[in-house]
Length: 340
Ligand SMILES: Nc1nc2c(ncn2[C@@H]2O[C@H](COP(=O)(O)OP(=O)(O)OP(=O)(O)O)[C@@H](O)[C@H]2O)c(=O)[nH]1
Ligand SMILES: [Mg+2]
Image (cartoon, rainbow, N blue to C red; front, side):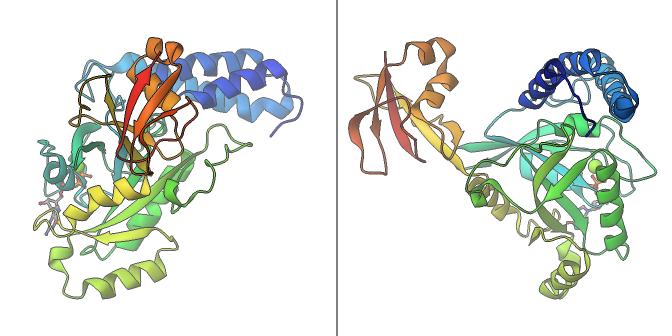
């Protein structure tokens, strides 16, 4: 990190880190470039910022195709649901087949590499929680995706898909990791449920992105000794990611993915009610463990949050319509009645 970064630059960088919204990130990047002290020690960083401005601006201008189907520009997927989870992997490993099977999308599947060209969103449900799964083009050295890091910025986690029947599986894994590393994206084994406190912001590198990752060992239908294969992969891949053997063809293991994500992303469902009425049990608001009644109110509406004085909570933690303050931490299954 070059020395002598000005307070203006640091403020711009903090704004950049705070937001996941592409347009706001572009504004912050331009402000970073404007305020960065122009000397030899910052040359690399200046070049990096310029490259990112170029990529992000192109990505934002680019879109005639809509990646998410909800008005987002091409090559971005606007997050929806409880969490956004990206399908990452080498060519032809079965990402789109999994996407199609898990979300009932019509993701295009082909028996050859580089079938998928753009991100595609779909929803994977677990009980009344919906995760947004994003199918992506393959990550491969011969097929660079300059927009990938920007696209992944909105993801909460990744599913790293490998093909268990592919002899070059380990080489593919290495190639995926190194292509991601070039864009400063790292797939990590630690998920939110294992963190005591929220992940510390990376203080050195505003561009570093770490995604909690579950490995999906796909095409397990073609493998006789699945446990043995997983063991080999575990020993040789140099990663310590959790693994799940799956098959997009037979459906093996697919039912475990939703519950796995729900548990490890530390998701909390809250049902709201208005006084004198039953709770709306159909559509939970989804939060993360540790979030509060105040956060629930913000999800309902900014005006509701501003006016909030207290809430009543019915929940698993023994609360039975008890009055609580805005800082009260909610738990999965709580019913909350907001009062102003
Ligand atoms: N046996 C078997 N074949 C599979 C499985 N999943 C996918 N396939 C096959 O693998 C090939 C590639 O599948 P895709 O889903 O297009 O793979 P992809 O990773 O999206 O490929 P790209 O978009 O090119 O990166 C197709 O021929 C699929 O039928 C599986 O679980 N078992
Ligand atoms: Mg595909």
